[in-house]
Image: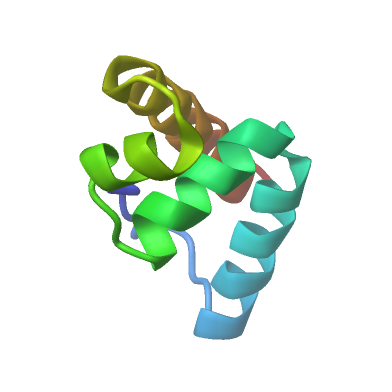
Length: 77
């Protein structure tokens, strides 16, 4: 899951949502798809693997890289 934003900074819910949407749009298409399926649709890696015809390991890697990029984007000024 995404790490929480620093308590030193104040963000309202709308600002966080804007930053998250912007970060997701900047991801490569495959990472966007995997992130949305896992985070929003709450699909298991096995379910995603069946739908996308991609190995579970590749999906886990895509999700991991997506999370790292989103965290960097959301927490940067």
